[in-house]
Image (cartoon, rainbow, N blue to C red; front, side, top):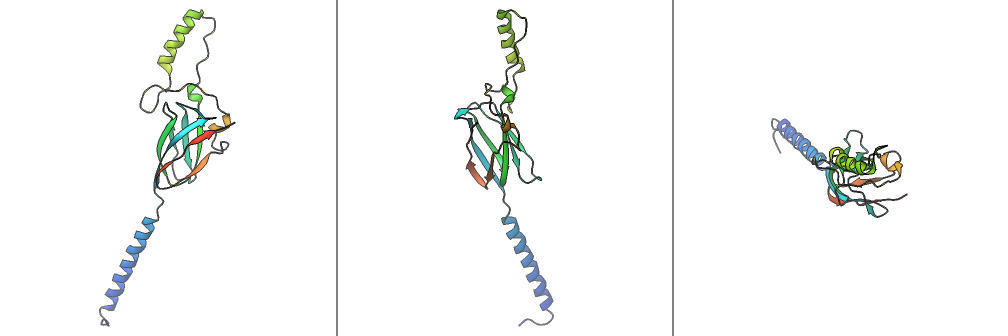
Length: 163
């Protein structure tokens, strides 16, 4: 049995060890992040160039927005937990035809306009999508009804939108 003068040191050492153990356990319980990838379609058809926004349920976490590639795929790192999402294809809406322009000049103007003013993707390149109309509710986080739970690690979440 330790002598009386060593008991306080032993108690401090054990309490310090207990605190360190508790902190290690709590750090290990952190939910972490998930690397989520997948494909977004509407009635089975791809939505290249559409914008997808992932909103974590935890208000302390930031939303993440990604553009779908030409195959309608995405890849994003998100905090673990529930996320709600929106899908918006309006970035690919074609500009209205120019009124009162002869047809041959209108086509030429549209070609130049499409090159110059096409929305740009994350890499600075032109958006690769044609406009695919989808129900407006998918552009609203409150109305879309789209959500899933992110787990730590790699995972796939394919999303097929319907009417």
